[in-house]
Image 1 (cartoon, helix red, strand yellow):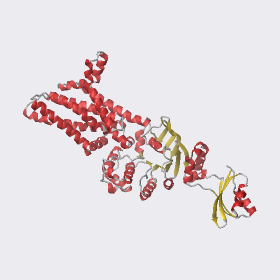
Image 2 (image 1 turned 180 degrees about the vertical axis):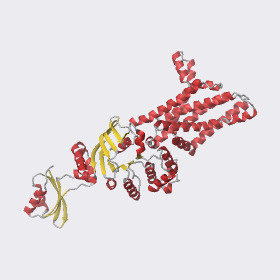
Image 3 (image 1 turned 90 degrees about the vertical axis):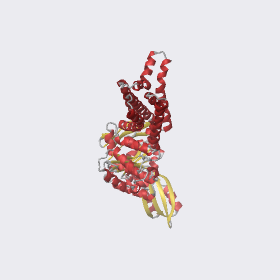
Length: 328
Length: 234
């Protein structure tokens, strides 16, 4: 549905986007993740045709954004970071204006009513936008994007400024919309992305640093060479024993988890699986292994790793992530 | 375009701007009609319109200053520019709305004329010449003003800029007496709004002047549209 190819955007010397490519299938909810200033909004603005790219091609529904801007704009409902609201209009006037502006052909009254009840702004329908709270303004912004039922929704940080209850409501709404819309949603709130999105694209400093499902991303990063082990036995002896093993980089104790049982994190050189040698060592020393697992990364860890500067240079990572996505 | 025009008109008249501009223009027209026709017992209608014209030059920047400056500041231009409408029709809609506000005042200025018409038979050609001349001049200035408001986020800068340019265009033909270079004189005569306006004051519907003002409007709508599009590239 959306194809982004080799997209770059420069503001003078400043590179906002550096050769980003991805594509979004019809009917998927994609999360756009990245720290502030990573290039999320810029990418969204380029897809919606508000900004132009310095180089690269964007096609939406088969239309090129440069050759057929109006066709593309018809397919997209966009909610920018700051909802584009006219403070001197009532919600009713505003939605009617946007209805006309977008040349929507659905039955006016009924369509606007439906959207209002969907995003729960019916009770402020007659009020001046200037007098609405931040949460309501945000929802009017979402309502505006939904006008005309566009097949693609692009939402730039849709839950900013909402209270926790509203956030859950909006998330559920997005989930429901995701059943028959293609949605790109940006956020720097991880649980949100995790709750709503089937696929995550991580950008940092204008570069695409990760692309895949939440699972494949964390798997590609949770390096096989890190183990979490619970062994029964004297802490120092075990620690030294583990350290003395071949290919071990570092061993760390996480303290006593059960009486006489300590938890350790063992990091090996890349490409070496330590599980067997840990077993053999433990058996030899008679330290019962109570648990042994690869350290799984939470999405937070994934995010922090991907956006840390060291990973920027590591292109293999992106390839790993892509491979992970393909396997899925 | 119709949606934009309707929204703009609503914005003008849901805030005091529209009412203040129209009522100030009408009050001044009323005053000059009274001054010329009653106090001076003259039927020289051109004097009413040409005096008013300077006041119009002050009001028009106030009408046009918010057009794009406000949109850019509120970031509402994002809604306009990501909607499936051409940039030119957005600009044309805004120019039309601003023109309609000005036109309301201008039509109001015909009230004294209509009353005079009941009791005598003034030279209608002269009156309508002046009327349409002012209307066209105003429309061209509005197109210039909308363009200037697309250059800046500050409404005040837009208003003062438009005001400055309208004064320059109004007085530039006075320079011709000082400049001897015929090419420069010709150029000044060409861009001077005042020279183009003069035929109307004599009751002549000069086609070249009408074409001139209409082209100025078209050129500035075009320039504004290009300006808005160029923001995408910067």
